[in-house]
Image (cartoon, rainbow, N blue to C red; front, top):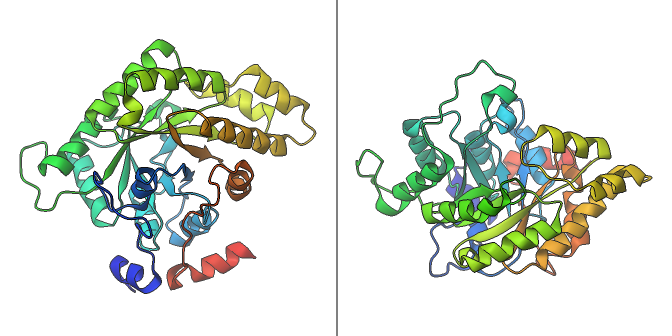
Length: 347
């Protein structure tokens, strides 16, 4: 089997091509290059399988081909157990995808986290999203012991130390520091609203270079938040990707609003889904409209499109939104590792 470098050479899957490296780049990754080139970026996320079969990851990733610039590999989302984010990223990088590894503070102490960061960088991962992680009480292993040795802000600072100072938190020198584009999450739509821009500022100060937000279903709230972010100069230092969710029904929307902390869905959205003849199609239309409106807000650099169990509609939603203009994101060349997967996904 070809190693990652040999696959990139053989199949033209260099994760940075064809965009050039510009001053200020901290990684070789395509996602960072897209943003620094001034393009409106699209990211999405892959639901890790309950399986050790790499083809299950690739089947899901193929749905994003030509539509997104980077793919988040979730890390025990909802405190539920699935294939690890690091494992998913390893599978994606060897084909040439641009994954964003998620690292949550819930499950690892600083020793394990620093080791995972080096391992991810060695595998070709170029972007990392630093998260606190959902509490174990909401997941499928409520008896598990949460760690939280670090929080999301100190995690950002830790990865920045590894990268920029070339040392572990212990002070020991790293022979070859990781080159990583640092990201964090934000939620402008959860109270106390007045503090959300300040929390964003703390993450930027700790090293965040891009952020992805919680679901945005309220454009006016997004506009107000971005005014605050611009006034603080945060959009000059950090790229903002607003989260857009694809709702399957009014029932789903009500569940998200009540069960997931920090999810804000206006009544107007729920009524629209309730009155729709085809709720799933209406949910996609809402996502398209939100993407178009977010793209018009000064300081918004992209969208993080979340379509849980509706990933097959990502291409249609992105295309209908028109936010990419004539730009076509990278698509996998489908080397032998993924060839059977690609064919089965297309049939």
